[in-house]
Image (cartoon, rainbow, N blue to C red; front, side):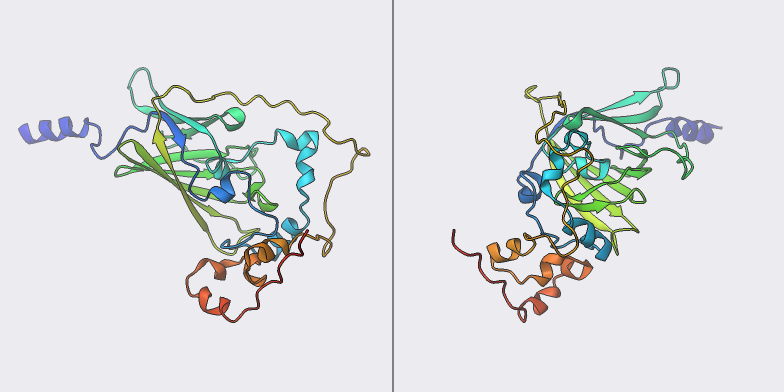
Length: 283
C-alpha cells in the first residue's frame, strides 16, 4: 500500500525534464542575415532541396509584385515567420480546474500573429479543413525539448525571392531553451516543391528590456498605378536577373539553381570543375 501511494504521488508531479518557455524573446538575426534582413538576391536558390517546379515559380518572380495592395500585408506563414525580425511572446494556457496545460501560445510581432500549439492531445483536423497562416499545431514534450507538429498551412515562402512553399507542406519544430537563449529548429517537408526536407535553425534571447515593438500596423495603399488585374511577373526564360547573383560573387551558375545535392559537403568537388560566371559589366 505504501509503495502504491508513493507511485500515485510521484505520478502527480510534473515532469522535471520540461522547461518553461514563457516570456519575451528577441530574435538574433545576424545568423543567415542575408536571408533574414533585406532578403536574398534574385536567383539565389543555393543550398535548398528545390525541384524544377519551384525553380519555375521563382524564375517568374518579379519583386515589384509586393507593391500590389493585396500583397503588401500578406502574412509570413509559421514555417517562415520566425526567420525575420520579430519579437516573440510565449505563455501557457491552463485548465482553470485541473491546471493542466491546454495550449502554449506564441504571439509574433511580425504581422501581429497569435499562434496556438495545442498540448491536450487533440487530433489534427481533416485534410479538407481550412488552411491558415499559422496552420494547426500540436505539441508534446520530449524531455526538455518542445516538439511541435503543424499542418494546414497556406501557401507561402520557402525563400523570400520567389521560391514557394505549397499548402501541402508540413512542419516539425523543436524549441530548446538553454538559460537565457532558445534555439528554434524547423523541418519543412513539401512534396510539391522540394525533393527532401529542409532543416533550418535560429536563436532567440530572453528579453527583459521591455523595448520591443509589438504592433505591426499595415495598411495597403496603391504604390504603383497599373491596369486592373496586372500582376508583375516574368515569362519562362525572360527573367534578366537570374545570373546576377553568381556573377556578383564569382560563383558558377549551376549551384545557384539549388537542389538537394547542393546541400552537402561532397558537392564542393563538383564546384571546382565548373566555370565561373562572367563578371557584371561596369556601370
